[in-house]
Image (cartoon, rainbow, N blue to C red; front, side):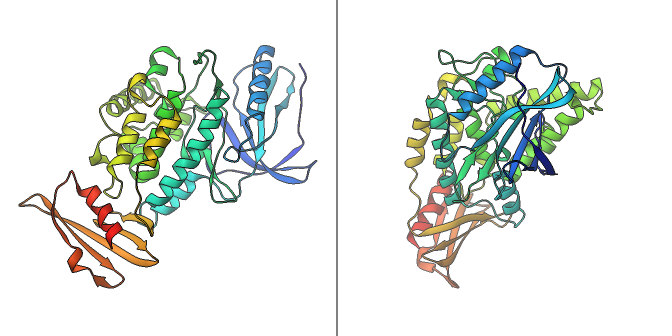
Length: 382
């Protein structure tokens, strides 16, 4: 076994940590540059065949160079003083603009959702990276906002390949430790996944961009299956009891059932600024049966391209709790208020452009099934 090392000096831990790894900002002392370091948590002694497998996977990842994929500088091991107890380490480019998760969290703290036009643009960035990875028979298997970074050009860069696996005859049977909230049914039942597992995870990631506060509330409050809970139950300093683990298992089972019953597919679980086309895309991505999902990301991209976004509109968001859509149209601030008549169960849409209510554009008697489409159409016609 050849133990390769890199001389680094830790600067600080990143705010966002995974369950199976520790990540931090460090200085590469030899090349005098800041880097991001990920040390993978390994319990017990590392076998030589595991080391060879780790380097084999790293070799293939190193060949996955792409503008939308995080560059890997170094893959090796960190010594602990015990030759049999070593820690797999991945050193990558430090992305100074942070993660998509941080951007989403900061946006929702303003009281507004994430802009629809940015969601569409970011989705294409992610799709391009996954098309490339899948062309190399690489599965990512950990697609979530904390593993996606904002590049220097403002586009997204997919990183964190700690769960990545490689396809043999279209399948991989050695996937393990998948994040529970992203675990498709076929992995739970047979521990076998194909490219549609990434499509499943992309659907949940897309939902998190559309409804980040709702998504976090599901994981942290409703089902209690987020990273902090996992650390408390199964981490190195776990304090969970058997009853806690039993409760976690019941919550996870309930979550999976609810996903299959439409948690990420029903319009009622979305903000009204999200068009039905995106809800349909997410629904097909997260279908319970593999055969009901998209076959590949080209199909996802094709459906996303069918969504016609209004010309001249930007920063298209919903003000949370205010029944109003806010955006710019040709650099002029606009607002669409929608209100429900409890008697007729129909909506009225009242648009404002600049400081003027556009009375000729007011729409009445809009049904719940056409509300999203009519809001988008009105934005286009202002």
